[in-house]
Image 1: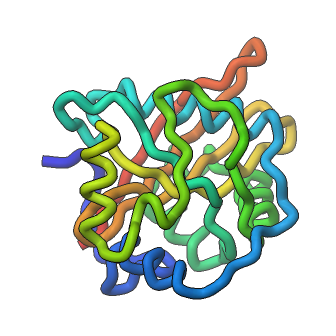
Image 2: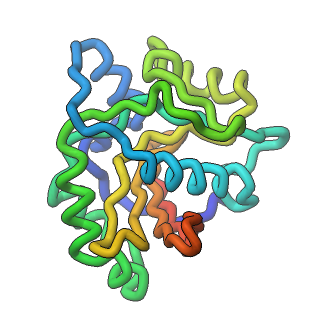
Length: 205
């Protein structure tokens, strides 16, 4: 059985459809990438987080899978509804660690799309477009993940940082899953290196 928690809540865009279906529909309309450019700090943090997922035995284990597919565009329009659901999926201790500054930064930085295309990640992280991942149907994402020998795709919001920049929350959708799933990761920086303090997943029913 998958780790994480099964909940009936839906983040924006989920509702009764899987994340794959929502993104496939969105791809039919033109979109503009916003002006928020990922920083060097963002890339280092994201790289550390996704490498952790590749190595984690309790995250989407697939025999022979040694990669993570990163969608090249971030998710835009982070709002209060999404923030409330992010906090609700955490226990009290974890929720307190995602402080107001982190949540405010997360909301501020994710009002427009941003692109990870052209940035250097570890070989285990494959950057792919939404069209490459989702194609023309929901099943295309399953086929793409299997072909790439990947554990999952991840669709990120840019990280939200604490005021001292020594910790951050990374929040993302991942799949493919029947009804959508999200993950929160608290990242901490020590000796100029980002590591994972904890990770919490949620699968939607």
